[in-house]
Image (cartoon, one colour):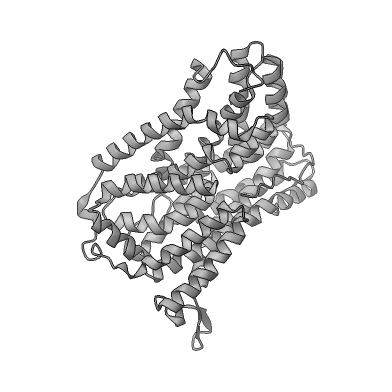
Length: 469
């Protein structure tokens, strides 16, 4: 996967009230998001007013309101933001295409052949998503590819929906942590000047216990909360005709494995899937575009897919604008300086590295940006106290693959909650961001491993030199 970490927004910004003034808009956003998530917000559009309010409060508190406005716009217009939005649009269109061409019915038919019920399908979903994320190295791609296919299928089979959604995002987090081509793996290893291959190998001792613990939790929850009466008996038989559409995600994954850009893989997959659907007769020609002249509207599965991605796209644009103002306040620089002064022992050093990384992730809402922000501090502190390079990289990744996948205001969680609306066509309800995060047992298991690593020294090899691990 292509990794673009350039950040053009290096300007500083001051607020009335100092650090508290810089944090207040973000606190308003957090409180609003948590309240809405706890209330069971139907989708991410409910977060829009909260973000607008937070930006308004920031504008009032900013000493230079022109600079504040320019920083917000700069944050919104980052290249990574546009890449994500384009990816969501294309993936949403592909999801609708796969549904229209009967691929969900085909998956149901396959599940019936293997006698999979809702419980078994949850376990299968987690394993499939782990494989896809390991192959693509992208948690976003895994969620975008797998959700429209597996969530409706599992819902029809009667799976517990929050556990099903948690299995999808959990599998996505797996690859984000250990895949050699994951941007998190690359950024954490290279930032600490560690070899990527050796770093990936060193993560086996963290990820295997986490996967086993996750499988136990998914199994127990799927059984305990399973409601077989929710299975849709009218759709359970399925039809095998749509199996040919399996070539579409296969092509996309192949292109990702070849190192192609996220947009490249998704756009090629969409074009190929459209042609395949038309040639096979699974996609009616009128689904391409239909002009309703009486009502002056055009109808198309492409339009439906774009409409589905609008809510998440606007949320992301507004959030990145707010985060840019927080970064420009210099808060992270002050936190790093504070931690550097108070780091006295090797154990303290690992604790401060994890704490600073956690704060960076929580405040920037972007794991790669957070890794880059703490790179110098982690390098200097690690070298001073002889903390192995790979151990430092692993601590960074453990944190980066936990909070963004469990807290309801992070984009991966919002994205997963958004993608559960793909079940609406089958009468399957959507899952809230709060539920997605709570049932992501893979990331909770990685948090357990992080605690064991930081506080109990798990993973240390005393015989190895700090330059080797």
